[in-house]
Image 1: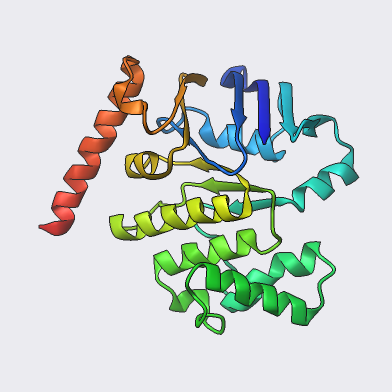
Image 2: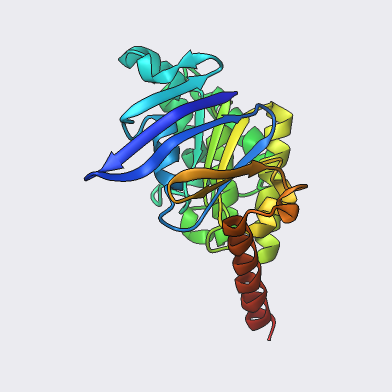
Length: 253
């Protein structure tokens, strides 16, 4: 579980994240949604320690990460898996080598153990035969699946996903969503996903946080989001749905 309490972050006197508080639950897919520029990515960087907060607390299973010393922060980061928007795979390494990279960096596994773990993670994302390929030989959806395999390779307690469906077609997006949800449940991770995709919200949004005007504006689930009377959230939902339907029509035309 991750608890965020009264996080504030400003850049040049402008509030980017203002008095944000939320609890992200273990074993569930926790989604953060909101318009571009609403502060989602900055919030994520604050939670993982890539951006220093002005004030507030970030608690990992009850321990305040912001008060950790350098070694304690390093140890915690070994328990964090990151899925970046572009996948961030190393072009010069094979798929297997990409997955082994964090294992070589953060674990004491032998090379044989690293290979076995990489093969196991590839099986989890249905890419068992792709270990010897290079990223240039993969489709966009396959790259995202490899990135998921790499993120879970160190067996993290916490998984962060930044726009995992960016640039993917609707069918592949559904596959990625299902993978994230299944892995979260199987390994009982605390997973936080930033997304603009309303399909993702409706499919895997066990907890949904809507950010507007740099603040937490609404909190609920995919079972309650369509019943909201929150005007800003309604506008976001129906504009997102309209744009996606328009895009799908053009794709299928």
